[in-house]
Image 1 (cartoon, one colour):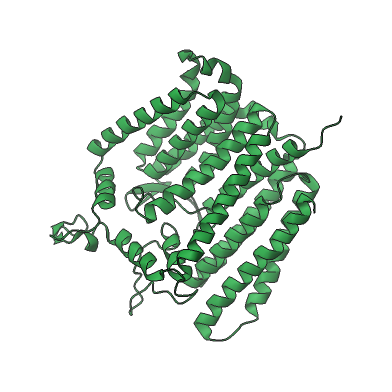
Image 2 (cartoon, rainbow, N blue to C red):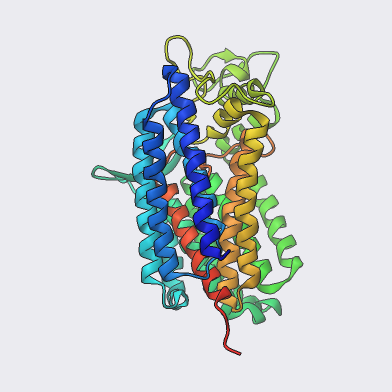
Length: 435
C-alpha cells in the first residue's frame, strides 16, 4: 500500500473514532443513539478527505501517518469539547475547518519549493518578536490570570505567540543552516544576530509574564542549536543560563514564586495567606485550587474512566470544579472520562506524531529542511510535555494548550501550519531520485 493509501485508510479509522466518541457523549446526555453522530463522522471524513486530495496533488510522497494522527487528535478534541460545552465545540469545529484550509493553502503555495522561506529568515525573526510584543501593547493586549497572551482587534481575538513560535523556528532553521559550521567552531561574533533575536523574544515574553511560551521557545532554541552544531557544550551552557535566569525570575517575580510553590506544595495543613481574597485559607482552597481539583479529576478516572459524558466537572449549581478546563486542563477531563488506558492511548498518538516528525528530519537531505523538521517536531513535543507534565505535577504548571485537542483557534491554526511544514519536508525527502 502506498503512503497515500495508508493515509486514506487512517483517515477512515480516525473518522470512526471521532464518530464513536461523539456518539458516546450524546448517549450519555440523552440515553439514546442519535443520527447526528453518523452525520458528524461523515462530514469529518469529508473534510479530511479534501485535505488528503490536496496532499495527494501537492505532496504525494509525504509521510502517510501525520495527517491521520492529526485527524484522530482533532476528533477526540472536538468530542471532549462538545461534552464540556456544545457552543465551544461548534466554534472549535469552525477553527478545525479554517486550519484545514490553511493547511491546504500552505501546501499549494509552497508546493514547488518551500525552501524559498529561508531567504526571509530575518523577516521571520523580527516578525516573531513583534508578534510576541503585541499583547503588551496598550489597547490591544488583554491580561487574563496575570498573563498577557491575547490580542483583541475588533471582534477578532487571537494568541499571537502561537504563530510567533512557527516564525521563530523558520528564523532559526535559516540562520543556523547558514552559520552552523562557524557556530560549531565557537566563533562568538556569529552568535550575535542569533542571540539578539532570541534575547528580544525572551524579554518580551517575560514582560508579558507568559512564562510557558518562554520555556517553550527556549527549549526549541537549544534543541535546534544542538541539531545544527552537534555541540553538547552549547546545550549545557544554555541549561546553565536557564537555571540562572529561572533563579533570577523566581526572586524577581511573585508569579514565578507562586507557580513553584503550587507545584511543590499544593496542599497545606495550616491556613496560609490567600492573595485572591486577602484571607487565611488552605492552599488547596486558594492558589492551588485548580491544580488540586485537576489531580482529583484524574484520580477519579482510575484505569478505565467513568465513560465519555459521565465525568463530574461542575457542582450541583453548575459552577465549574476546574477553571479553564477546556484549555489548560482538558487532559484532566480526558483522564477522568477515559481513564489511564484512554489517556495513555492519547499520549501514544502524540508520540507517534513526534516519532514520524523526527523521522522526517532524519530523512531530509539539506540543512534547512532538517532543521525545520526537527524544530517543528521538537516544539510540538515540548509543548505537549509542558502541558501534560504541568497537569500531572511533573513540572510547574504553565498556561499553554494541548495541541489539536484544547479549545482555541490560534493553537489549532498554528499546529496545522506546523503539519504543513512537516508534510512539505517529508515529500521532498521521499521524492524518488533519478539514477
